[in-house]
Length: 558
Ligand code: DGJ
Image (tube, rainbow, N blue to C red):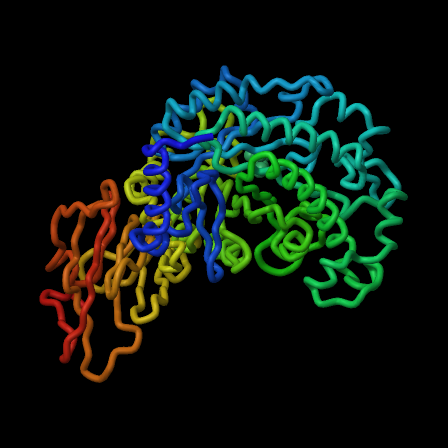
């Protein structure tokens, strides 16, 4: 075979460019892969969802459970557009794609992909299969009705439980085959990666029985604890009871469910390596309840390590947070934000009081947030979520996304650098409406329901709507945004006679990666702190210090 001069010239040019590129490109660009498949990247205990080669903040929304049919999509898109969501989480049900064994039908997914692209949003697919809120409701009838081939669990009394047992190859192989067919469909029909993540199963585990007590399960339970789990917990070998004592039943169940999902996820990733996560119905954020009261075997916070040992193909574990209490909400964020676990809230209530939690979620560096039940099909999961999904309720979520939409890429970068913080107003009106955020050199005091002028007591807003998110974007420079919160910066450890000042507070917003200036805040707008109101405001705050006493604002009524 001969090569022309032009071909040789081109080949040399490509080689020269390839050698020069590391020098020409900024440091982080080297991390970009030619392969644009989304992925989760982690560095020094921090995480980013990489979409189209760059960190991406998922401004998400999850549709209702049965909105996974083409005729429902016209009820979905108007709500998504109103919300300014950039990603929609949609179920794909096993019963829908494999109604008869071996006959696959991905026509809904086909329609969904086309319409998502038309609406300029990305997708997260929720694989409702062996477990959906722990039950096999979404498995095809040929699975649900054949419990000889696909056995259900047995409870401690020897009765047949509703959940499918995780201990049977027959069930695992059937689920895996359908999941692999789904991933194959994506590989062929979604080269542009409209789908950015996949959630295998949904809220796995079992209610009412801590584990399967069938003979098959019992034999495994009496056998040795697998090596990776012993290693993870630093334990010596033995059977489950001997090694884990009172935790043994739940850890055993969690391990086997996690191994089951691991095999499915690994087979799917071998086809197309999209990020995969498992969502969790939660146990109480504080204290330890009896496993009979929550979905035992799911990725509850105290078994995250079991899942990590069992399921290396699962990128992260996620809390579905429907608890309206601020202290519990923040605790769940703390429990799932780990060096080895990217934080994402794939489901949260769509009632008005959940909207403010967006700010601590992104402040914790989460890769995404998604209120649940965001469509106009008429179903409302009150009291978990909203009583009515009226315009006023939607607007509380929409305004958050409008703030972040133009700067989601920047925010995701700051979060990946570990430079973001957030706070939300307490739920209890009697609680202290003042929170401190430690930003290193600076300390932020966030107060809720405080007059904009003066230093009166913060008593909370008339509805709990206060929330603030802050990012460090340069030396002594911060981006501040949110609603219904007063934000005051102080030096964390001022030297003698040292006082902080706002060198410049600009209001503006990001457009295509550029800061667009609108005005400077000064005088009343900064004297007592920065008052974020119900207006959509993004501030760039440059701080400095001088030698001298702090300013005493004129006209202070206190
Ligand atoms: C959590 C589940 O993951 C969702 O699918 C849904 O059932 C909600 N609970 C309740 O509406």
